Every structure is written in C-alpha cells, then in structure tokens.
Length: 182
Image (cartoon, rainbow, N blue to C red):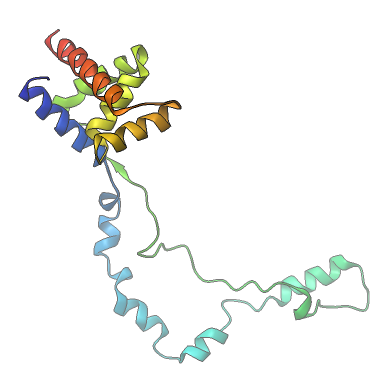
C-alpha cells in the first residue's frame, strides 16, 4: 500500500471534500439576529387569540380579484364572483426566510496543500473512470468496502465485486503515488 504521508493526505482530502460546503456560514447574520428569536415571533401574535389570528385577513379580502373574475366571465348580472366559486388565497409575508428555510451553502474549497489530489484525480478520471470512482468512494464514502463497492457498481452501471474494488484501489493508489513523486 502507499506510504503514510500519502494516506494522511488522502484522508485529509476526503474529510475536506465531505465537509466542503458549509451552510452555517451563509446564515451567520440570520442566526444571530433578533428577528428569528422565538419571543420576537410570539409577540407578533400576542395581542389576539388564536381564533382571531386564524380569521384575520392579511392585507385584502380578495373582493377585487372576485370582481375582476366576474367581469371576465361576461355575465352582466354578476358584479362579483361568489366566494364558493373561487379558491381562497390566504397569504403571509414570506419574504423573510424562517429558521427552517434552506439557504445557500458556502463552498469552503479544498485546502491549498491538497489541491494536487484534486488535479490528479481529475486526470485519473480521464484515464480510468472506475479507478477515480473507487478512489473517491474510498476516501469520501462511508461504510465497509462491500458497501463502497456496491456504490461504485451503481455509479458505474455494472457488476463490481469487493475483490475488483480492492484491486482498482491498489492500482489507483500506485498511480497516485507515482503522480506525487513526479
């Protein structure tokens, strides 16, 4: 197998790839703002009961839309479309994302001293797609080598045994060791 320094670098590279995207960094401002605090949210509904909050109209009652629909229907006697004939559109102010909303993840990138591994695996994937898949799965995936071999088989689209996985891993490691020496 490869020497210890290469294995340490590959493990560090795999850890950096798995933890590359940080969604918390994009939300640092939102996380520390008072806007998302539970008490601040509760004050918004405090002066009224739950029943009043459920029946409160938000901004408008939809009569303008129902008049527009009645005018487009072409029936002269109908000035406004009845409530039972339209879908209700209740809305809230959704411009502010809540704490459960998804946000953009920040790409932290690969550390400078491990970028040579990215470049080498890119070159390896052009030469041997399976070896690059095995190398990525070995250092970025989780589970036993049987599960990793199954994941490579799914990505590859063919049969792939544990023996084949280990053989391709050894060849990829030898290739990577030669690439590092060059």
